[in-house]
Length: 160
Image (cartoon, helix red, strand yellow):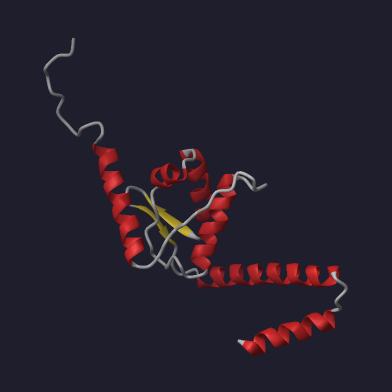
C-alpha cells in the first residue's frame, strides 16, 4: 500500500517535460526560420547510423542551412524522432563536437560552433574535391580524357 506522504522536490518526470517543451520550441523555431533538420537514416547503407547523422548534419552546417549558434535538438529528442538509440545519437554529437562543428554547453544544449570559418572552408574544399574525383572517375569510365573533362567543367561554369 502506498503511503499518502508527498515527497518534496521536483517531480520525477519534470525534467523530461521541460526537455520535451524545449525540443518542441527548438523544432518550431527552426521551422519558422525555414530550417528543416531532416535526417534520413538508411538501413540499407553500409555506413553506421551515427556516421549517417554526422554526414547529414555536417552537410546542413556547410550548406548554411544550420547557421552559426543555431540550437540543435537534444540527444534524446533526436534519438526519439529517428527511433534510434540515445547512445548512437550521443556518439554522432560527440563526433561532430570532436571535429569542431558543434559545441555542447552542459544544461543548455548543443549549438552549431561559431568562428570556424577556416574549418568550414577546408571541409567544403574537401567535399568539392571528392565530388570532382567521382566525376573524373565516371568520365574515365566512359573513355573521356582529362582535356574533355576540363572542357566540360568550363562549359558548366560558364552556363551558371
